[in-house]
Image (cartoon, rainbow, N blue to C red):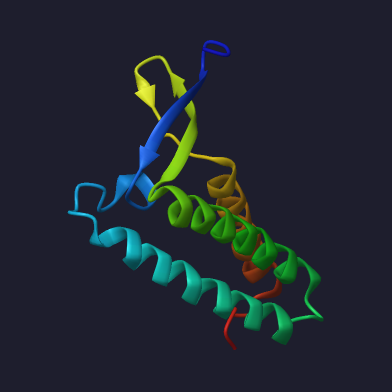
Length: 123
């Protein structure tokens, strides 16, 4: 325990966000690797197309970095290592890692940019 609301743990997440499909028989490893590779290619293409939108490129870069980090874990270990465990009294947030934080930050920045500029991402 680091403090009253933060623990450092070692969870092996074979699923996706919130352990989605973690109880599957093993096929999900290759499914999520494929999804990650496709997302990485699409994000790189989007960054290249939107070079004149610096906030959007930053957001996409955050997502790209998180996707690559989780892909490395999943490819090497067969699962993603989640180690940050936040809680308040009886409320426990699912464990996550730094790559997940980058993905979430990138999504938040995309939403901010979309509302600020009132332009869809894929216009």
